[in-house]
Image 1 (spheres, rainbow, N blue to C red):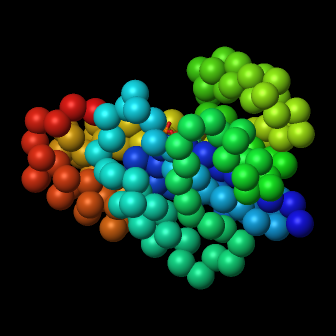
Image 2: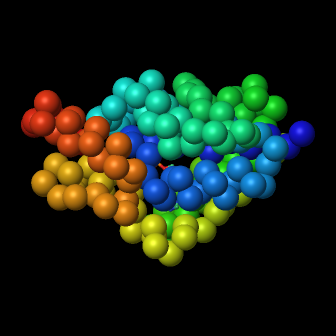
Length: 165
Ligand code: ADP
């Protein structure tokens, strides 16, 4: 059985993430979508809420499990018996950092391969930080996130004005 991991912050899930999850889940038997707790980022949503949103996006999908991890990604990958880490690539600007991380992860765990999936062109511009910025400035997110995620973001802004991201 081939197991893959797709890690990220997913704060919140966007249609760009959804696209990568759909495509990655076709390449493995079991895909773990793993929400990372990144102490350097100031999130809008707590990890359980981010997982709930992901789950709601993928109701009825059989081979995708939503989870979270602390610490090293390769340690988590080994725990799950994964041999593939999926990353999405949007623009050249993603490349340098991802290239460095892929090489570091290979050094740490040569048995785990990083596979890059190229963004679908209609989502090339899309990131969680962009949607947070747009919603903070009063914009709409049609075509960027599912309607229920947009509602959650708008509520967040209404209730906690002034929080940085
Ligand atoms: P972001 O805040 O940039 O959306 P995440 O940490 O949640 O970042 O992203 C998780 C993974 O998904 C990363 O590998 C990232 O490159 C990828 N990703 C995010 N948005 C897109 C997109 N629109 N198209 C392709 N890959 C994406």
